[in-house]
Image (cartoon, rainbow, N blue to C red; front, side, top):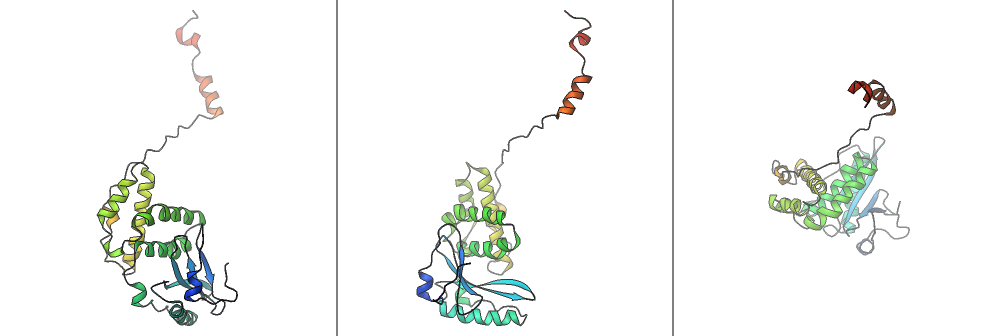
Amino acid sequence: MPRLRDRKLSNRTVAGLSVENRDAVFWDPDLRGFGVRVYPSGAKVYVVQSRERGRSRRVTVGRHGALSADAARRQAARIIARIKRWEEPAPPPAAARAEPTVADLAERYLEEQVAVHCKPRTLELYRAVVYRHLLPALGKIPLADLGREQVSSLHYRLRETPYAANRAIEVLGRIVGMAEDRGLRLPGENPCRSIDKYKQHLPSRSRAPSRRRWRRRRSTSPSPATSTGRCS
């Protein structure tokens, strides 16, 4: 678990953090449970992790850039105190929530939904879809501006690989669904629901007969002499 030994999280420290292949959380040495998650894309999100009734709970504080390290630290301290009192953590300020992009919500979905509820292998598959297809094409688009035209265009560009195309739209639909559930987008306007999926031609799996079945079939089938009545 990465930890900053002698340097607390500051704007300068956070700006110098980077990862290559997978995201990682760097924990502050002074405020226990306060950290910043750094993604290979360069995005950085402040997080809090504390225990509530014996269970670990992680909460997103805000995105670095929209929120300074000092402001994130103050909010983290309040959130940790509320969690320890078994209270719901206060929502992040409007400044941290203003105009979230598809990339913001995709990273939040991976962290708060997939990483918590799914197996590691599933998390890796979802990350591949997000970083390979969704972020390069749609990551910078504000969530409020995401419409059917952009989604349909992405689906069409991936038409040569139907499985990847359908999977990308499925994951994006779940990300938008999470945003609707949390009031970040109006419900009932998920543009992924109106996209017709491509047909996926999966190879047929012909089940070869077992040796026992093959022997039984051979013993019950008529011999050439029997079937023709006489040998030629």
